[in-house]
Each structure stands twice: as structure tokens, then as C-alpha cells.
Image (cartoon, rainbow, N blue to C red; front, side):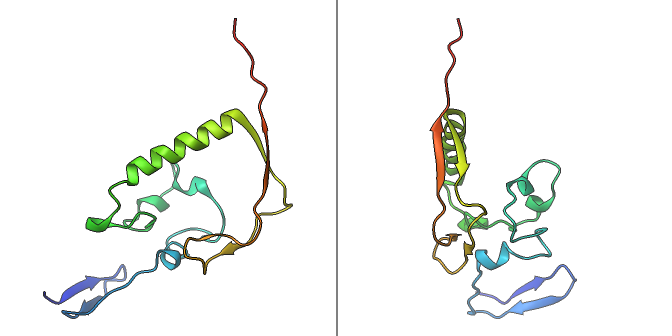
Length: 129
């Protein structure tokens, strides 16, 4: 093991001494205003084309990072996209509550506090002849 110098975006250098442990908190890091515009706002488009927030290395740590990233990450993204596309294609989905629920940042897996109910109804299918 050796000391590890770390340079910040302000060009300051800090040294992590040999044998020290470093911990990160994705729940905190992914809420930094310097990285994400309006970090506490639900905004899935922040990762879409034309937005630069997703291009900052390790800004989004949902699946870990570097040599310790989850090897199933790509499969998970495909699986979630497939499930959501089928749900949105087959059902009309409506939020029942008048507003989005508060976020429970203290939970092991960040999610909504309390109820987060939706109403869904199968879409009418049309047959092409």
C-alpha cells in the first residue's frame, strides 16, 4: 500500500495516507448541487441527450464505480427499460395522490416515504386488419 494523492476540481491536492479507509455515500454524492442541477427534484431527463450531468465521472453511483462497479449493470438497465416500456404500452397509469411523496433519504434503499399509490387501467387494444 502507498499514500494516494487526490486532486480536486479546484486544483488542491490531498493525500490519503497508507492504510486509511475512505467511504462514500451515493445518497449524498448524487444530491450535490455542484454536480446536479436541482438535485432533489425528480428529473429523469437529466441523463438524456443534451444534458451534461451524466458525463461527470462517478457523479451517478447507482451501481458503484471503477473496478468495483456492478457487473450486472447493463443487464439491469435493459431489464428495467423493458419492464417499464411494457407497463407504459399496456396500461394507463395515474398517480392518485395530489403530489409526489417525500423522499426517504434515511432508508437503506432511497424511496418514497409512506404511500406512493397509482391507479392503472389496461389500455384498449386495436386490431390491425
